[in-house]
Length: 337
Image (spheres, rainbow, N blue to C red):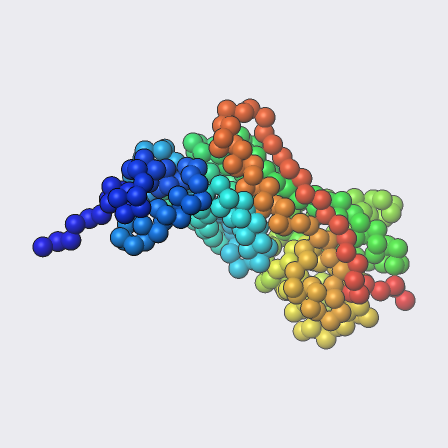
């Protein structure tokens, strides 16, 4: 004979509380800590698992938030995700993380999958801000969307890093050390980090009444392979810069590999600055000067903005939180001889 399926009445009987109290616990509504512990213990003892689908149909909420990122191997996104998850868990939301591999088609597939899963909101670092199909899809969803360091037309809140001022500080610092031949490898103009870092780079030269050497400004992918290929090309030329800025932590890992391949020494042969303060920039000998930003702030504020929009969906004002950048000086830059 098949075993009887347990239900919330069985849980209520085991815990010695009302069915309504069990329902409040299942739907994550406020109860006392003692009652919560009592009901959870009863559910474990009799093997009761709440039906998330049925609950979402009753409450019109899945208590799930999507986080779509373009490269799950990038440790920066791990920091952002961890900070966001902490905020969401305090409000009983769970986080679903998906990786697009920098593929706009895969990105749209993931967004459509999250729509089908009926998530309550989405945080996303889109692969290409100029992709009209992705923009149209995001504008069509019936849940709030927060952009992570991206700018797109539409009803989206955003958390953006102030890349340009940090880059200007870096160029000013290099000029103070006597550098005039400076290169930058960064992302393309179709994403905000690449666009803003390049703009800050140019602005830094204008502040010094100097012109950028366009041969040493490379904009493309934000990955290690691109950083390596571009650094090899720039640093192998007969005329090369005395300083190089890596516009992204993964680009930096590629640049560092190229420097070692060419048997160059930091900072004797080349001064180096990277964007984002990660383990590699600290553990490298010498430690690398970086343009830093608070990634935990990015994640936590993005989650807070999303929760606010879930609570106040009809609020018209679009919110944009800007996270500042700062230059952390270490030992990877020297005076020009």
